[in-house]
View 1 (cartoon, rainbow, N blue to C red):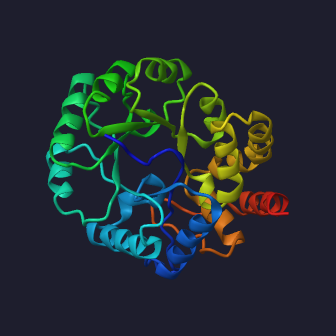
View 2: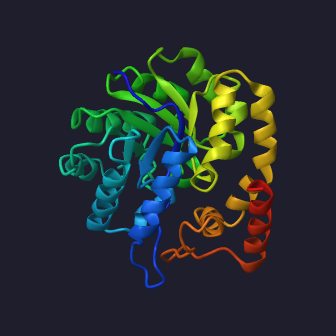
Length: 292
């Protein structure tokens, strides 16, 4: 199955007001920043969007708002996964038309066997015609999707890509070497995106690009096109900020950078909290450097 999920995908944050409501005005500005900044596709309601603390109704409100502002300019991916296979399959039938693909995280907490992961994704694929991006993030799910499992799932027609956030280069190289030609591997870790591109990864689903789409897209597009001199310059220019953004968790760091760009305020829902004052100071200082 053909798909549009290469280059830079941005896992959009969900802006909140001071009283904890969704800030749709800020969300509009965030999407507009991506439309102007070189982003290739949008991801709504990934972990960066604080999906665990949004109600189903709120998730649909966010999705519809992004769809309206985007107006089909960029491909749009919706995050829908979980550790209850039946529930995920049922929710697929409630999605509106106009979504271009799904990002579906491997089941978390109940730690399925590899054959359970395969069975889970087969069930999901059977309940939708949309292209599916698998998401392997062992640091959050407490289980790894092995290269063997990924390659088996890559043979399913509407499973088109993997967002790999294991950090395991050996595993990722195994997938790249043996995958079908029409299956795409995407980085799930901003800090090592460029090194991964050098071994065959074709893009990223990024956190940092929320606040710095121009710089991050320039790096990725340069790397994918083989211009590693330019890509390396951007990579090392962004290295400090990338570390700062994740040093107290996600999305507190990137939201603080978005405050600097006057996109949104740094409000989050518990149990997540904003970054410390000391980190805020460091992020502002580095944003001044990067924004010139």
